Image (cartoon, rainbow, N blue to C red):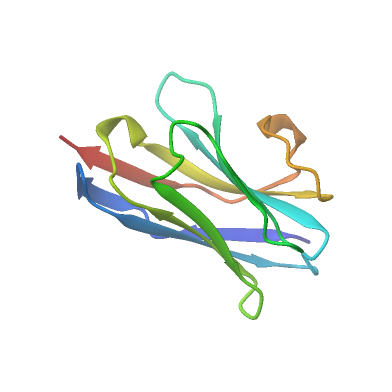
Length: 124
């Protein structure tokens, strides 16, 4: 059974940084795509970033490109989302997700496994 456990959320001032972690377990993730999504109150869940585990290629939403960095640690089976220059509009619950296959899809409906979410709040 795949399990994803996020950590690292919190409250930060605009311009600050946070690093989210997602520890993955339950299988080998070499053939998986990992994603970060976020959901603000009253809004639909939206794509933030994705990484193809095997090759490490990364993809970002335009709204976070240049500010967020998605990386992985194979030895720890953990992925990270480094978030810099945070803005109040980045405030949301952030979810780690996984799907089998090496194709990046930006629609959350294609992801089979989800973490519990971690709150990120950016104050102005």
